[in-house]
Image (cartoon, rainbow, N blue to C red):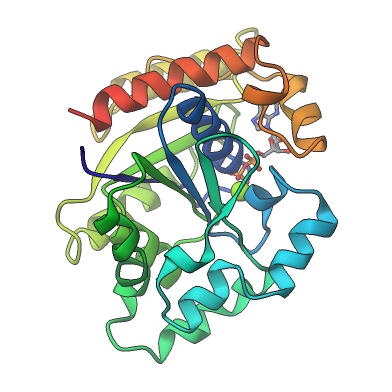
Length: 263
Ligand SMILES: Nc1ncnc2c1ncn2[C@@H]1O[C@H](COP(=O)(O)OP(=O)(O)OP(=O)(O)O)[C@@H](O)[C@H]1O
Ligand SMILES: [Mg+2]
């Protein structure tokens, strides 16, 4: 039995594709036979909404089966896992109450390590091959918790004119986290929403290929309306349209991620 790998998808730049990448990489890994747990770490609840309709998502958020209750009460995360309906793929939902998490963390002892402590019984059991955590577009105490609980960070970057803006802040932050979690590794940067016809796509690609701080995954995800249709139907595109271009791309990226994470 190999160790459970914890990977967070993080970028303080909003709309860079974190949630879409988390849900689809998770679904692709599950379809490849891996056991995967997703954790929705964002008050926007977009990862939760990727699998459940609004009514069900809000019911989960208002009940106590969500990450907010787990962290506030410092509980074992095993009690907050629910099935997504896709084989091998489970999730811990979020809640809009996550907007208050920074305040709740502030008064806690060893406040950077609460998530790490709460997730440790799941890791000790070793049931999952991967835990994938969707981070919010911020760099504060909660994202610090997420990174301290993770083995790897993957940075989704949107191939847009402002896509690279703020990336330096992200690396500064990761270096600060390393003073508490020295083994945290940036597994790579994944380009999302690529449009090969646009000149800024080529610029993004060239800049990131030469970037020394982290590897660029070879597979990039092109912009594809099917991704949004799938989200509108509360499903990852990998299960909604298995043979679509983006489903193929996400599966290829998942294989690339697993290759590096399992070294
Ligand atoms: N490959 C793609 N093709 C088309 N649209 C996409 C693709 N990937 C993501 N999107 C769309 O881009 C928007 C932003 O994506 P997403 O929510 O995954 O980003 P995010 O980084 O999680 O955002 P936030 O910072 O708000 O959490 C969404 O509307 C999503 O549907
Ligand atoms: Mg998101």
